[in-house]
Amino acid sequence: MTANEAFPAHVFDSLGIDPLVHDKRIGGAILVAEKRPPNGPITMMTSGASRFPIDAGEPVELAVEVLEGQEGAGWRALAIVCDDIAENRRVPPMGVPWRNSEPFLTGTRISAIMVTPSRWGPSFDEVRSADGALVGHVRTLRMLTDAEASFASANGWDALVEAAGSADALLDVTRNDTVAGVLRGNAPVFITKLHAEHPPRWITFSDGDLQSVTGLESDEYMDDPSNHEIWSVDSFVARFPWVANFVREARPGQTALFTDASGRYVLEDD
Image (cartoon, rainbow, N blue to C red; front, side, top):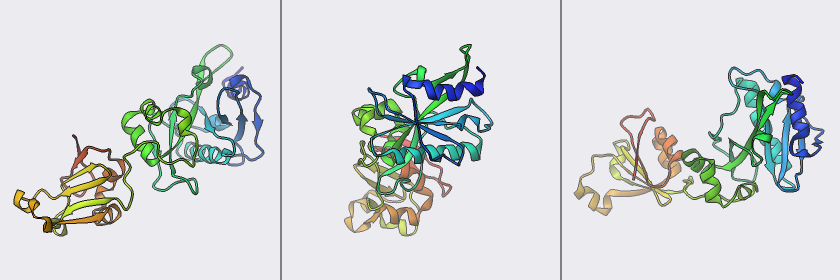
């Protein structure tokens, strides 16, 4: 068995279940096979993604777990990552969420995809030739909300599963966030009126809101309530666009120090 033969054989044989092959193909060429293991969720797999030329790493097929009736969501996630492999000649990195600014599934909060190990272990994740040589992998995609992606980026997949309660709690694409800490566009930002003339220097994320100071405020100035205003996150980012990355990625308790308008900041954890 050659390496090219190992991938379709692995997709067909994995989990000990014959696949149901979808009529629709990704990009007109990539097959999508569906498996329904008795002790796990519906698992959709690609067959053909491993043929894409890549500049580094080993070839991969993709898998995604979905609930009954949400196969379309799985198909969409597979298509997004297949397109990225084909266009950028790269395999998706393990444990690094891809985050979109808006949900990619209409009517849901799902806006991110993360590659993790599967629940099945090496027998599913590793593709081997007939002589046992490792020729590639099956990469399992997780569809996440932005809050979940932010949490996983900072703490890892295992910590997200623990916080959510189980991996199965992260299957339903119509769910709300399973972890706290995301900043919404209308979340409050408590600022001083010096922001009318000076940019933010320290921004702190705490309990669902932001506090921002310019660094020019004295203790007496801060003690006067008339020197403070409340903006929305959207208004704050529109006025100071270079803070957007921190606002999007911040976790509760973090403070960012900005020294210029480049978007670079130093993170100070409380």
